[in-house]
Image (tube, rainbow, N blue to C red):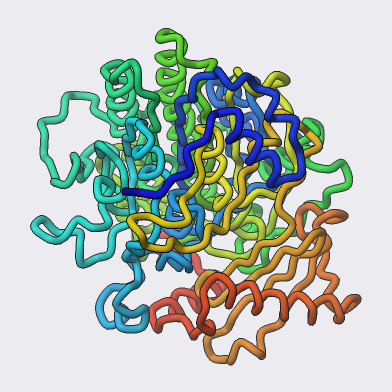
Length: 577
């Protein structure tokens, strides 16, 4: 029997408030019903893609969610999918729960580098779903999971890391990091399924249909927790042409111009400080002005399809929100919408046209002739990497990097019965490890210290529930980061970042230093000006790492080192003909 300290709803809010030194949230009546909880996890979507975050992409339903709730401008992910999702589910950092990266990195001989426990969630943790389920919540996981080690993916293998073993009553979606939107590798509960798909099928719509069905057919007396994880905007970018065509011509100006326009819009909206500086595009990413005419035509279409993919997802999310309203559930449903990392960078300068994660050797002129195929079932595309820096404006870099472009993503929290001044902005630091404790605090619960007589791993996250009522509530001040040898540490206003070269020892890494209170976008490296702060931050990173992980940081696996090297290669072009 899990040892959960059961509290009244109001007492739970009071305890959550105390974590931040604020008691204002506890003013809610103790007779309040426990809320329904929904997390909507978007995939590979940058900080500025959504309309309410300064993007030109039409997202009216997500914008409406923000207008009724709060936008967070200092929400940090783990810069890669599975590490973020593990932290979201457990309230612990990815390294702590054996998810330093994505399970796909442990293929072949590389698995030996990670050790036998890699990508197996520990048994001495209760997930958010388990704690909620133990207290009477219905729990459903719909969409992407990507928390399964490679040796448990095949039919007939153990299911210890599948959703139903980790607290969910029901799972419908896909097991791995991505799937085709028109021909998905579907899973229901513990088994792969191959149902006949109707004409016009699209996975995003299917996942929303399933979510609406679960809510409509729930036991009315039970609150529910829905973890909805869409494949949008992860590659393959696939959406019917009528959605992509809404953006025809909108991206002809190119990624540099779009990035600048988003930056200016964010400043006008008051989303980012007025004195924010836009860092220059990285030298290893091509300038739009340097592209050939064929490249501009092709690369603009990539972004048109990407934008249509997101707008289509917004429309489906709108159907879910409408269903909540029609059933009278909106007021007491807490919705947390976030992206798992910055925009995708894996396709390099050429993009992926026909097939993912393979060199794009199709001549650009041929791609131009085949533009009508992009977004259809005939292609599995991902936009070229420089579009990602536009998606991640106003920051530098993108997914997989320790800079804010990789780490910082949009997060919206809506709970109309609690958030009385919708449309607000919260500028305090929140990490993805904080989401689980916040969901539990909303339900009057917390992660247990023991379960079945077994001591549980310490929880790294802290509830940010007080921020929903109090604009002055404080967030966290410190958070470490590591991915593929790259490191970062935040401490108050300071943030230090180190890019690792596998040929060197970690002690040889050069650290950059940013004053994020005065420099929101990490535009100015102050390491030469404040070497003493750099040294303090290096010591602090080591201390935080050992506190949460317990063993020294080893060199990345050989395949990871090769991936790191690819990002530092000279810019490459695809053939013109």
